[in-house]
Image 1 (cartoon, rainbow, N blue to C red):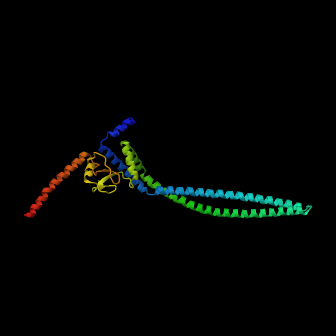
Image 2: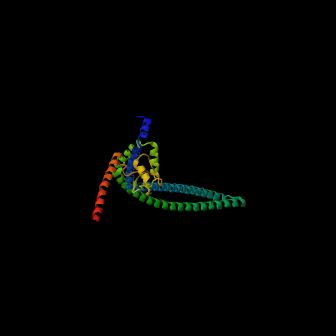
Image 3: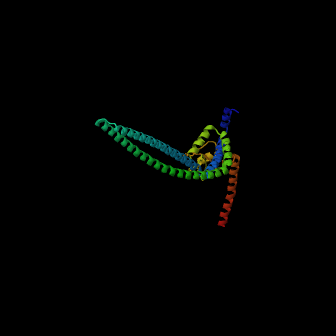
Length: 284
């Protein structure tokens, strides 16, 4: 059967059949919601822990990278110190063969400059070493925290896997059932159902009337509208919360509803004479 034919079949369903299909879909989806509630916040907790671990690992890698950069800087400064020391040896040798005061002053200044360069390089090396020590302490603390988080994540995953293992088959069966029911619902109705369900805090898109009120938001439904809902001749939504309203007998066929109504009328007729008899007995 082509897609067009399927669409036509969905449209040809009676209003009652459409309402009943939406109601059945709600029943299945609500059971899936209960399974999710059973899992509680565990999936979110697992995700948060995984994100925190990933962030911490990235931070540790960044600190390690910074330490490598500092170690390179230390090596460069040590090379500069050796170069300055080599120049000092050279200038000291040249001092032995000076010919005038001008050469002496020039070489003396060069020696002083190289001495200052060595002192500056040593000072920077001390700063780099101090930075490395501080970063190593941070890394140690981060690794300790990382290990704790990994242990916590392992426990949470075990707990979640246990719950998922218990409910997975049931959830898969319910999801398959939900998809099968959805295939027989007109697309515009299915879109509306999903939109209402997405906006509802309890995931309730189809709400039965309970004690004359909407079962979703608990606002009163006028008697005439209740009768219209019971007739199942059109899809009626709650004017307060937008949920699709159904009567309490939606799980019964029209024949069963009619039989129930006749039975209630018969019971009412039987009850009336009894009340009159009691009144008559009271007068006597």
